[in-house]
Length: 244
Ligand SMILES: [Zn+2]
Image 1: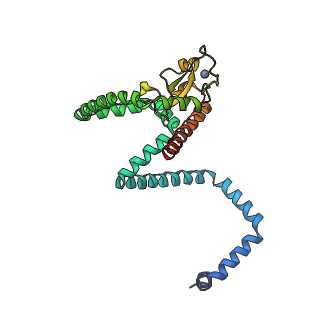
Image 2: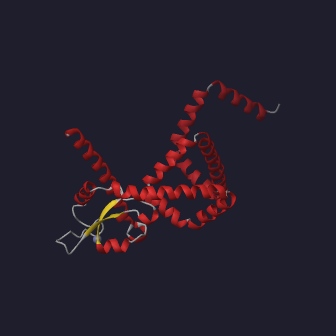
Image 3: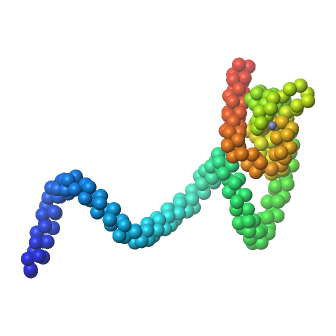
């Protein structure tokens, strides 16, 4: 055994026997050579930029795949929770998910087409079911939104247009209650979907998604207010039920 080798072995034994001492010595060294170490690190990063970039890329790819795989496994094991969670997430992020849909319309259409081709029977069944549901919804739509709802909504928006804040005055300027998310896309008139709009803003909006027409900040603001409207309406109902 040559000298170098036996020295290394002795060092290894020492490290093994006195881990605390080794750690303290390391910390002391790091403290005393902070500037030097930082400079060395900077130099290292500069000299190995490409290598480190490749490493980060690989690491990202590998951990990303592992994360996605774990996610998939969990999802397969907990289908109900996942469905509920997704639904809630989308209803809390309506403008995001609709924008995503609008941006990926073609992908969705392609996947849908593929599905239709593979499962013609299922598609027919869903269509029948959808027709029934739409009919039921239409009836419910007019039954559910009462005069009580209407006056609550008018008061909530302080008799002003939700978009341009035009105030109702006399009979000339008429503000009307309208769907925030359009009926033409399947959204019923309900306390969480009812806004007060002037004729101009109403006409501008038509049957389009709000974010296709109005500024994103306005859309977010109104979605927030709609949540409040729903909450306050619920609280009001509870209060009334208690006092009656
Ligand atoms: Zn308006």
